View 1 (cartoon, rainbow, N blue to C red):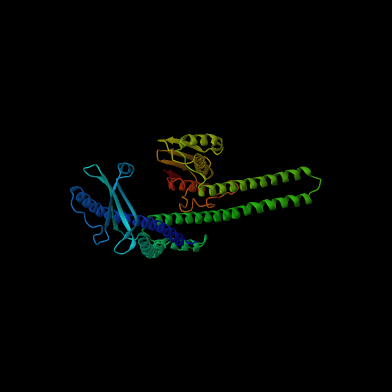
View 2 (view 1 turned 60 degrees about the horizontal axis):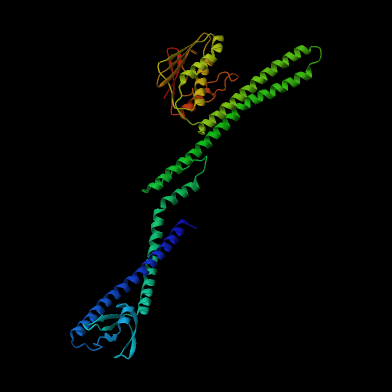
Length: 432
């Protein structure tokens, strides 16, 4: 069922209930007003007769030519004590002039004269035929029902159709949207705040879907491209081991074993590189998918000190001098695991692309982390340095994804990463 039909049915049912309740209340209100006016007239008529009877004046005739009539009789004190002195009722009374019964409003009144004698006075006046009134009200209300209901439905359908135009445009845009294709922007202006919020939510959802598609596409492309070479190398080395085993004889088994051991070592390093590459690609994908959530500020100084201490022997093997200067507490709001990844990759990059006997200077302030290292005496391309697999001279020791991982971590945690070359030093700065 379409939305407009559902709304029309609900409005129709509600209108029927409201109009039905109003019709019942309208009928009883009219009857109450008619009875009230009739009772006032009967009270005046009865009062006139009682006053004339008590003062001894001549009573009017039983019928005064307007179908109003009265009847008076004497009653006992016991009867007066048992019966209410004032009673109103609707019943048929006989009209002498017309010789027929007519519906009338009757007032029965008991009073006492100066001699303590009780009289019962009954005055009546013709009233409207309630059955006919019900039929008339029913027919006219039925006509009113039909007219109002038709008008309400037409107005509702027109109003809902006009109001729902932004929703229909949004649904058509969603039906035409294709992930991975060039899609036109959503053109759906509206002054209704709920529809504006819906437009923004749908666009954001589709944008995230497009981003995830691009991320998965990029991940698969990178993985397929980068894993292809080490896989081919592994296959070739295995084939070489098999061919070598076929060519050798038992005259020199020690040389054969040593050669095979060297090839197995190379094969192991290639497989380790593939494992590191796969792990880094998966980490990039997890970060881009928002699987790491910052829960608090992380003080980077103790992490840096721990990394430098752990790598001290590695630095010493190449005679690289490392200094750490803390002029403040650099504590960005970031997941702690990501903070460790960020610092390890920056410090490892400063070591890998350094020169023997070089230096690494790490400076921490309240808003900045600065890592400067010696290296090649020429600046890098700042526009390409953070791209995957670009800054990677030796793929057996580096995946080529370290700085790309650093940039992704910074982008998803509202940090700014930059590179510049200053006085022979390659400088990477992270600002919060």
